Structure formats: C-alpha cells, structure tokens
Amino acid sequence: MTFAKLNQFVFGVVALFAISGAAQAELCPGVQKISLMYGGNELTHWEGSSSQIHKLTLPNGFVLGVKTEQGAREIYERDFQRSLTQTTELVKISLYDYSAAVPRYLTSTWGGSQSQQGYGPKGGADRVDELGSGIVLNLEKPACTITKLDLAAIPTEKELGQSSESMIPDEKTKQWMQVAQQDIAKKRYVLSMFKDSLPPEVGTRLAQLLNKDGIELELIKSGDAHDAKAYMVGYAQTMLSAIETQFGKEHGRDIERQLKSEFGF
Image 1 (cartoon, rainbow, N blue to C red):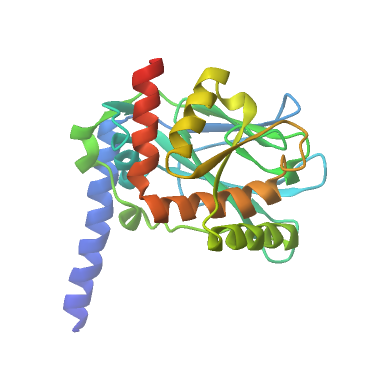
Image 2 (cartoon, one colour; image 1 turned 90 degrees about the horizontal axis):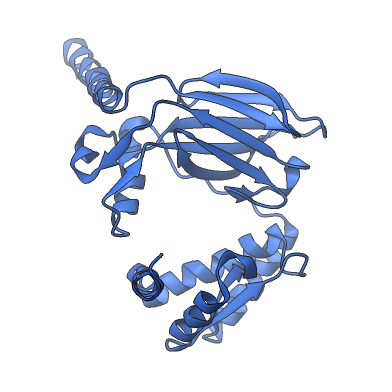
C-alpha cells in the first residue's frame, strides 16, 4: 500500500467515526453528565461518554475504575427483539478493580442516559461485593427516545471500538462453575432468580412453564447460602448459558411474552 493510499484509508476511517458520532449527536443532543455517590456523598463527577477510565479510591480503600460509553447499536437491537417499540438512550457502564497491580474487569451494564445505576453487595444494576456499602451513578442528559427507525444512525460496537470483556473468576466462582457443568452433564437445568424479584403468582406460573421443558426454578432468599456473587456468576450464569444453548435464546423470550400476556406487565 502506497503512502497516498494509506492516507486515504486513514482519512476514510476517521470520516466514518465522525459521521457516526455526528449522527448520534443529532439524534440525542446534549452532554452526558455522570456523578458518583458513596454513602450519600458525591465523590467525583465527569462529562461525556468515551473509553476513558475514571479512577478513584472509595472510603473503604477499594480503588475503582469506571468507564461510561455510548450504547452501541447491538444493545438497542437486543431490546427491540423483546417486542419493545421504543427505548431510552443507553449508556454502557463498565467497572474495574484497580486495587491490584493488574486491573481486573468486574462488570458491564447498560442504563438510561437519564437514570440512577447502583452497584454493591445488594445489587441494583449489578451485584459487586467489592464496593463496600455500594455506589450510585447519577446519569444526567436531556431525555431522548430511540425507535427502530433510529438504528441506522447509531454506531455499532465495532465502529465505537467496543469489545466484550470477561471477569476472571476467583476460586469460589470456579467451584460453582464446576458444579453447574456437572449438573448440565446430567441434563439437569436450573434457572436461578431472587424470590423477591417476582410477585408470587408470577413466580408460580414461571415455574410451571419452565417445568414443561424440564427446567427447575430456584428462588433465592436474601441471606441464603446461594445469595452470593460467586454462586450467581459461577453457577447461575453457567446454567443460563447452557439453557440458551439447549433450548435457544427465543425460549426465554417466549416465556417472557407468555407471562406478559397473562399478567399484563
């Protein structure tokens, strides 16, 4: 490749990102603002959605890294597959452990650009036991609604330079993964949920629908032995992946649609 062609290629890539960013900015104008709260007090705040990681030390001594990025087209496509006709603008939030010499990925979630997202031992957007009493991210930006017609204006993960990350499991998590794999080998499938996450009548009906396909429903109470991140990540997520592989991703969506039609939520 000549230098002239190389320059043309680089210019083309830069132009592509510029066009994608401009289209999204026109679709949802305004500046994204984020503030991080701990124990009711603001520890830090910043503006914008990018791949930059914001690092700070929490009052419990934990060194946290936070990355807030623009939601990619794929996450909206996933939501629209669930029969949604519109959704709010989304932000991808990733958390990292910077307490050790080598940073460790903790989790990624997606939240509305105008919302509150909580992380800690009691969950919220996600359960992160390392955060002490927990943090809350306040996201502020003018409200923006996304429809299927807007998808073409939203850049893809590749265009945004985003990639999927995986948490490195600790020993307890690995042990639960092994237990799940042993159960899967025996054709035992278990869907784990927290007992308070569904009304009793919905939980009963969900169990009936799952049992038709030989899937057990495990309802976990707060404080139970299984009320731990190692179990939820090691066993529950391994099981969920196996269920999707065995029965297809549409299986869960079909059950969700059935419950919505019966209970109207």
